[in-house]
Image (tube, rainbow, N blue to C red; front, side, top):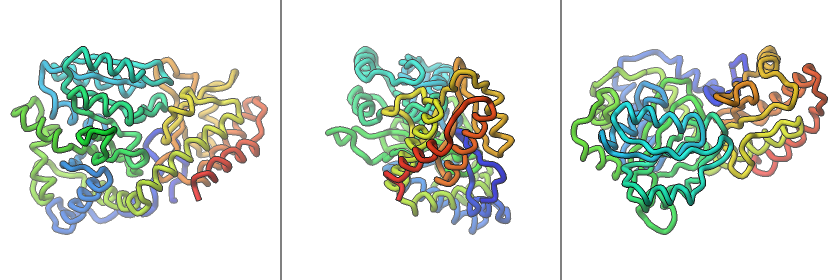
Length: 390
């Protein structure tokens, strides 16, 4: 890769040379037949990746826009949603929904833990919810949601299941054709994401997939309090990219189309297994340094980890030491700021990159006066990688 630094934050993530090359292609008009063909292919590849029976929308914007599109196109003012939150980004659905006059109830876990499924079932039984939001992996805590348990509960309650896949899509299973449990109607209704995480494209694309049931919910709403975020205004473009609503980010679409080909060529089963191995390997290696994830291994996300510092390690000094070596990690949010760091291990990252990071983390800890054994950490990393990554 031509990247000069190793970007191991929860997103953006490392970009492959092929994707950079696509991004640097000559900019064409958004109605040029050559661009139209690329955009159409990207839309079809998005449908293939998510296996939706409905439609997808790929627009200029961030994952936050995709969150907004999910809510405003399915839930009317005065209706209720339930937010299942495992951290900062789950919480963001609350002010977003309230901005549109939507009533919100929240089930919020202690950071590093999951919301109890029995509590979810009890709350769903007490109210009439139009939709329930679930953050598949929360970027602030590294907690992965249990869709196998939650989707049947949500669907049995008659609500739409909205999955925030910003830090999960293309790395964790989000098959919208999959039946959860025994009921054939128990499926995910909406998956929303962004381009810059496990898909491995620079930031700038909001991506969202609607099931047929979610599209029906949009149809029943009629006029909504949105313009750019209204999927009806984008439908013509997604059906025929030569038509116009708003100018698409031409070069980002080139890059996205290339990235999706890489994702699909690897195969989703292989890709999911690779990310599981990466997450376990990184956390095993860091435990050798006395560093532990706030999420138990049984609920930890494959795509990123939130890691507590050993006593005496100053956050700013640690991250600055790594940055001098070209390794970029992220600080933590809210009450964990200064107490933990976040490290991404998703998308186009490789075992070689992870080994480099683990060695450099060991070197920085030694500089900060923490006695560690880098070789033991690397051995732990390789042992976990060998289990799944061939």
